[in-house]
Length: 357
Image (cartoon, rainbow, N blue to C red; front, side, top):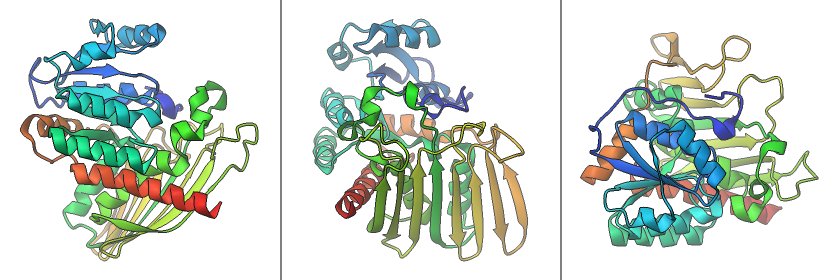
């Protein structure tokens, strides 16, 4: 696993199976973003059976099969849609295509698991919501900064257990490494990726909704800039925004592409959670100057102060919960309303920023 390259960051999800071999079969398709490997690793770690792969680029398929030997190469995407043995298709397409692909998957009678951001427009979201309701199939999203990070996941468990009281505010800082010369052309096309708050920001909104226990929120402020990449006019390299949740909790987030070259990981992502009875700082990927990789929670409450080391201790329960939700019609991993709301609010913040711009 590369800890220095966020585009190809794909944790190995360990051995946390919830199903037996062949009980939950899935395929991968549209491999435009390296996050597909994290999605697949998570499902495999939970016991899923990877049967097939499709992409129009043979080189991408070759690389995928080299990583997962024995996987069948599908001749077309339609072949996967028509494969009755598959229960889910995982995908990391170009962002503005994710909605239409998801609709095809759900209409074929399968669940869909897409990389974030799941949409680039509110129209795409509303259409996918209708198809999900019509078909009864789930539109799952890989909000990896919480669901594929041990400290971020464990923080949610501590909050749910009431260990810091009622959450009053969440602050997320989300720097990423640009690696400009390694990115595909669509990465710099705003129509394709949707803007920095739509993209990276969807992770952050999902964390806020989870930690603060909100079902909705309003946008207070949003801003986007291209500070240092004039040669890529379609890129937004900085964004910030503020929300207020329907329960009064507040949220501020900064997202950017300014991880310096000397940083050993792709981004010093941190989350700060203030509660009525304590606080958490989540150091997701690095304990700067001390440990890399790292996955730490710094917790203070009315009884103690402690550092909780989560690296290789918590695992990634989300993927098993996703599989069981798909099989049983439950909503343990993440409700469909929550999935869509995180995307909706990030896109509304993006629109608010563009209105100011």
